[in-house]
Length: 307
Ligand code: GLU
Image (cartoon, rainbow, N blue to C red; front, top):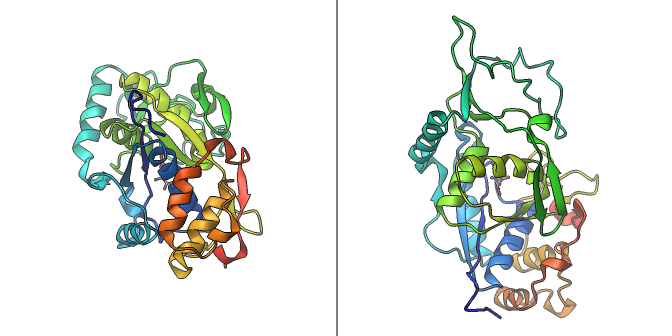
């Protein structure tokens, strides 16, 4: 039951419009939705189209339509990152004024031999940290990471510690192609919307320490984090557009919701299989337990969800 003395949680789902909604994204959406709503909180929807070249035309509308069909109800207007560029520019300027960012002249080719970070991305060796050589000009803008370890307790995965400077190095906030980086946009968007809890797929766990470091530099609050297992196909591959995951639109809504709850360890009773959506949602809200979510990195999907 909702405690009127406790602040109500604000959760969100933030899909990138790179294709139709697949089952893995539905699981993240259901987890974030129930975490906020079962506690009497709000749930927001944001379309992460900051990486315009990777956005697929009409994908956002398709995702919104699918979420509505599955019975999700979001609070307030949908936020689109393409409408937030001024806020990103303003924050970047503030960070520049305070010495948190510096221009970087390195090309992809120059960084090709840099050591790899844990997630396989290149660790920035700090080449331009002390300033650009005469004649060089900035291509991208990087965040000057403080030395030390970022600690947080993930509500599903437990304590996490990451040395961002050692593992990732100074990371890009404004890319050489003129686009703002996801890391900056997500931190600013969550703070502007008053998000108190970020519930998302474990594939984003390696980004969290970077986001906390940015929140600290921008003097923004750090939300609570819960990273859900990702859904994998029979071959153990994460369901994604690349793995040719099936669009959930092709399957009955009731089945998709029921299976998402099962993947989240909620053990919906078999009598609910095939029940109307409203009935499944009512059961899910009444029985939601974050503690029941598997503490593993991956959960398998039924065969229906890949091809
Ligand atoms: N837009 C990201 C994605 O679709 C999610 C970002 C987030 O939840 O922080 O993978």
